[in-house]
Length: 234
Image 1 (cartoon, rainbow, N blue to C red):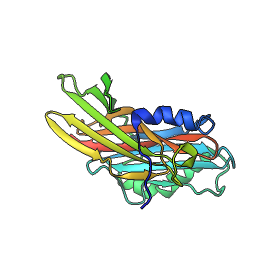
Image 2: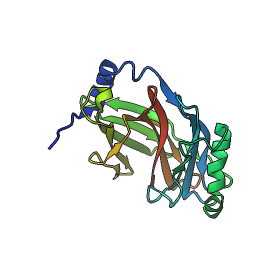
Image 3: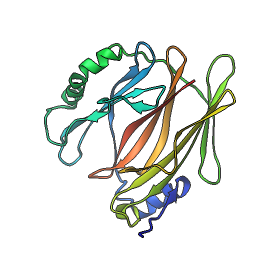
Image 4: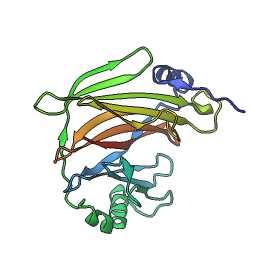
């Protein structure tokens, strides 16, 4: 049985820099096109675009997430193909919006609502690399803790012996004396190097929460920073 090297989040950063300074010389970020909650606060949409650094083909990525179940809706998490079908990133984004027009209409995602961005009160990291963020949930003084920990199985490019990078994310939330696990550390996703928390948003009806994360993926030249959406009901 082949054994892979696992890197904790603390060790991963220094190891990535040591083994692959050239590979991470450039991190290409996707461009945000639109995002927001549905009119009934039950779904969240995130649309972003990029241009392949080698082929320069415009690409678009869409996520439509069912917030109570923390899952993509059927045919809601899609991307444009690798072959050039749209001349610009704007056209690539429109391609996905056109493909999901009926779905977005059915889910009340035509006029997106922004909800509220929760302010960060505190951020800590322990000696195992586990990060904990504390957010103010409401004016009544309630707080929300988001705890994240991760492991990276690197490919040869990043100092490992695998053919492809794999990363696992453990994501837990604590609020009102309740604990909920959104993602488990034993669930490795291919083609991912690491995750970073970007922001947390409360739905307009104050019943659902969205965690928007950066996800770093290997790319043709360097790496690409895209978006990963997680959610849970209060």
